[in-house]
Image (cartoon, helix red, strand yellow):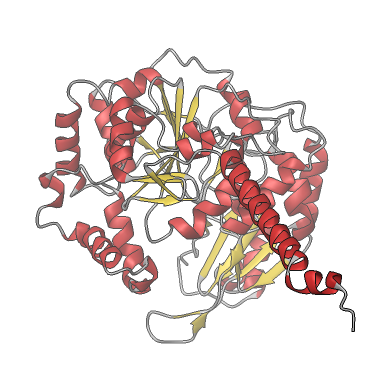
Length: 490
């Protein structure tokens, strides 16, 4: 029997050789591809973790003046698609003051909306605990506070508790809700001066520094049109003036603007003595923005009121009407994350993002459709002017139109409404038990649910009313606006 050698070779020799050869070629190819991919990857800084600089590198950067947000810039930062109204060469730093108990519930929305327009080196976040959010550093305003503030001071209990929680691997949600809000408020007043001094160290020599809270919204269109009317070479301290105590100061939540010469007053050779005095006074001050105003006042710089351009309300609280109609508003306060997104969408859907956004336009677009109802129960339209119950000279005589109670606006909702109708300047009112308040502007307001009376009696409800036809008539007579009115409140 003749045996053919070919199958034997294919089975035991040549076939196995070719199989091994193909596997070797495949393995070498995969190794080469992996090496090429590795070489094509951008170099990762050795002193980073996940793109975020390590603490010792941050400290070195602070001394050298480099930006702490370098991870964002080295990644090739570009402004967002909706940022045509933000000049990329603007000499402006946005300084956001927040707290560890709220940072991660508020800052992400800001970064995804209007702060996406700001170059990373011009955005600074300050809190009462160091950390990171995305590629941005959150700086601890209070890590250099003096013993005048921290020693045996219960205002710093939250600060210390936060550090302990972090060391235990916990987040700030572990703090008691009923306690942390008030504690955060007391701690916040120690931040303002340190925030300003560190903002200068991290981003020095800019023309303008705008300080805001994490629930502040900025209209870039209006802000830059307004900045163009100001002189950055002069020492300027601008904001929504608060006249509580002496001297007056700029309200922090509304935002306040400091020029370069004004900032230099806080970072001179006496910066440490300023900080020591600030800490000592802050223990008895109501708030940090007040104490910062006092520090600048002692340096010879008074606050200039620029309200309503710098403004402390949100759209549902705006007092539309004679005092706020053709006015551009650059900042808004108490703006929740959803409202930030709504405002951001609204501004970017306008016909022209280069023209100033007036309150007239904002009302027509966002509020008018909600102001056609003459009455809302369990609602507060925030009318401020109390209508006093008239005092009878004698015991009331219940006779026809002379009935004392017939003219009492605090008697009922209908009495309050009729009193508003008789006042030619009244646009709206709010009624609650034994209380009637008017307003010479029109405001949407917000829900206000029944509450127990202090004497333990029946629940107190709030009922709001608007004179819709009077409001619509006033609007028809005052629209369209001839142009922006940049005049401040008097």
